[in-house]
Image (cartoon, rainbow, N blue to C red; front, top):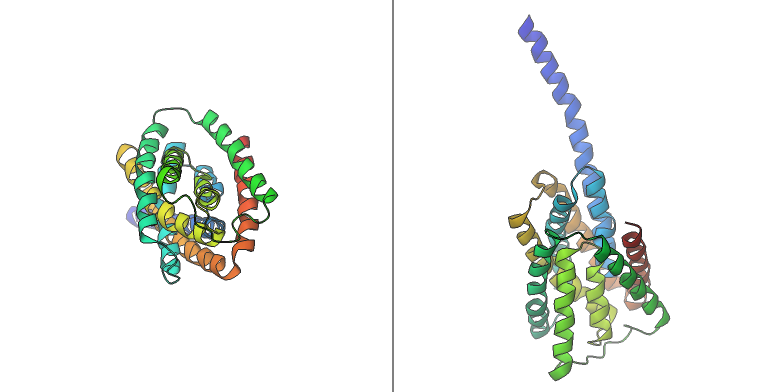
Length: 270
């Protein structure tokens, strides 16, 4: 008799917990899909929605950062599957962005585990906000593909800035992909469509992958939450990349400006 009561109690607890777990996974999937869909369209900013959601659901900041980084790798995979069909990426330029950015990402991932980040977030918020305003004032920015600064001193400056952005990418969580997008447009002369493709494939997959690996070794990742986040990021990345290709430079520019301003405000508010 006692065994029967105990069995009923166990079964009731299990049936009660299952819908809550399923609802949590569904919520994670929806958040990841929306956040990474917008990011794939605008060229960055997935952390605007995804990271606060992870913290709101109960993860400590450091674990949320590592989990967010790991999940956004799927954004790069989804975007890559779509952009490779367009064949718009130049192999030598791909290698250049990886070589200059990844060391900065690894360095930044070490920094985030050792220093407070509020002052850095405030500075990054002001800078991100200025990116959106700058793009709004430059109406024709990124509408034409006019490659420049691909050799000599221009290449060194471009690589140095990418290294610095890599440090920000490894140590902070929101908006650094947007920095890469605008830098590729402003300094290297890419149009928004090509710049977003490079950002999503290289930053989304390789920069974030390096950051996630470093944070996973030095810190902790919430592995139970990753399946839903990875699936949402993968599908969101593919859909967002498809919309960016179909809609073109003007639409990407407008959404880029909206996302940069929102990310900047979010970083300033905290």
